[in-house]
Image (cartoon, rainbow over all chains, first blue to last red; front, side, top):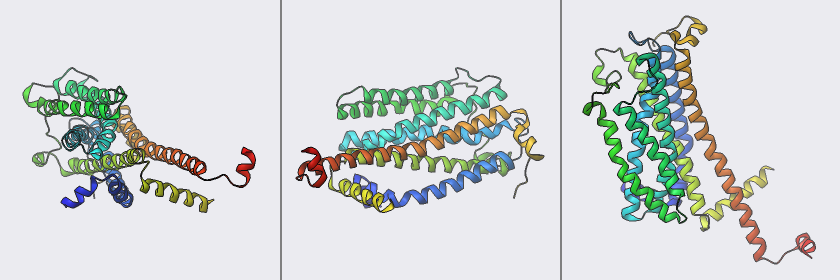
Length: 254
Length: 74
């Protein structure tokens, strides 16, 4: 296991290992996604209070967890880059940022679309909503910060520092519903502890969409990271061989 | 297996009167999936083409030109 992780630290091994992994991950993810979405949209019974608009929650909760989880992963990568100067960690970090921003936008949009029929407003400056908006600003700011440097190394270091400092905001988002009296409710209606009050048909689809979003995130992350690897390893022999091989494949196809 | 919760397609699409909210949420979700699975693949093709072009250019520079290429170059 440790050796496997160690190998992932090498760009070449990461690239070669993920080549065979992508079809499997895609298959599992799309299975989970289709089951979760179809079940959630069509077969879950309507909520006795919220009617049918609660079906948005099947996207909202996974993307919210995803946006925060992505940031924690980003901070880990930043730490690995800062401590061990591991180039691979920075390539992963660079690939996480746009995905985290996407998840954050999705979480805010779906939350807003759920809030209008439920709370009567698209937006409120509630602690959880505001801190999630700040998370989006941090993601977007990080992309800008990296591009603001001429040297890639300097940009990577600055982005890493921001990732580590930004962790405090994730803690704030997570704890906001406990620390402040927010309009946003705490984790309740989909949690396992609530099994007694909600029929399983309501929360089971959330597990499917939840794992589907995790699968999608890693799939998208792998695709982006592979591009980063090709770009930064372009002068190495194995990338040159790969390019030659692809050229030959195109030639035989034609 | 749970039952289908709506009476027909029209009722399903209406989402109990919250169609706009529910469907636009799922639409942006689909957008996120489509874009982030396709864009990196297009990007990859672009990178490979670019690197291949450079590889061929450099190979051409290192070896003496042959055949038609040398005739064109004069």
